[in-house]
Amino acid sequence: MTGPSALVLGIETSCDDTAAAVVGGGGEVLSSVVSSQGNLHASYGGVVPELAGRAHLELLTPVIAEALGQAGLVGGRGLRAVAATTGPGLIGSLLVGVSEAKALALAWGLPFVGVNHLEGHLFAALLDHPGVEWPVTVLLVSGGHTLLVSMEGPGRYRLLGQTLDDAAGEAFDKVARFLGLGYPGGPVIERAASHGDPAAFSFPRAMVGDGLDFSFSGLKTAVVHAVRRRPEATDEDVAASFQQAVVDVLVAKTAAAAQSTGATGMCLAGGVSANGALRAAFAESGRELGLPTYLPSRAMCTDNAAMIAAAGWWQLEHLGPTALDAGADPNLRLPLLG
Ligand code: KG4
Ligand code: ZN
Image 1 (tube, rainbow, N blue to C red):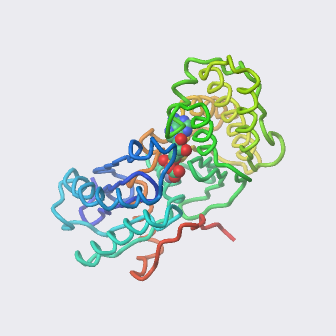
Image 2: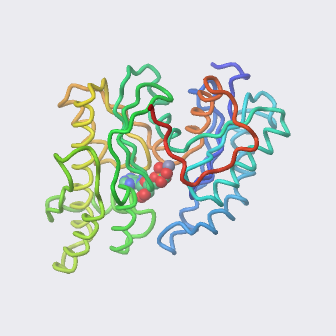
Image 3: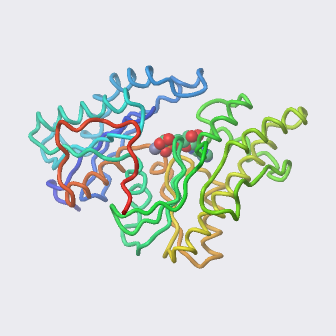
């Protein structure tokens, strides 16, 4: 058990999930509450920024109250700091979380810690694996980002590769929208794919064997052309073949990155890492290479505030608090080693 002085309240509002969590000592999750706005945006086929911001305003205070209550806290008593995502993300959504976190920090006389959302995902991946040896190759695949990172320790990141166009999650979302399967695309594609044949279509594996960058926009176009050519094809077969193409590229590039950097293990992070086919192929690749694989629990893959509290704790200990006049940055980048 961690002492009460090590408790951090984390707040996450960068996109369409309103989340709050209390984490002790950077690793013990006392509560993690996520209120997803998926239904609100589903009929639009994607996140509507204005609606997301307004929903965060309504949901955040009760979500924070629930997170504190589940952790057995009354107000801010017993907390060490308040951490919130400052970017990247939707500016209107980020501002709701950042403003609330600063207000609570001021009212409770606690430090405020501004956390990079991408760094939060890296912490989420390793929350369940505190004893890893560095460097670890991390594949961070979310709705907005596809990054291959060599993590040499908390706060020590080298960028190995990234997408040149669409993010992996974005490709899932766009293909799901094209097939009329709904939003968010990842879970509905995965569900359809489980009843389909991954070899029904041989979609392109872009840039495999060609460096560590990714490209997914050609795959999306290939899906559109294939469905127009074979209108009798089932959604299940298209989804399974598309998913297989994405998984093959993601796993091949992560394995190549791990080998070229002498990594001690491979780790998944971000919303797309909830995908069962990706998780299975990733673990299999690790077995072939003789490397341990670190797969976050599904709740830690998608956006949550426990990862923000964990990153916030580390940041407070090693870099100190964030100034209260620091703003939100929709284009914030992962801080990289020089
Ligand atoms: O990390 P995340 O929750 O939010 C961002 O920071 O973007 O990732 C959301 C993305 C969406 O594109 C969603 O379609 C995708 O993760 N996703 C999945 C699955 N669950 C969520 N993609 C594939 N398979 C899934 N099971
Ligand atoms: Zn995310």
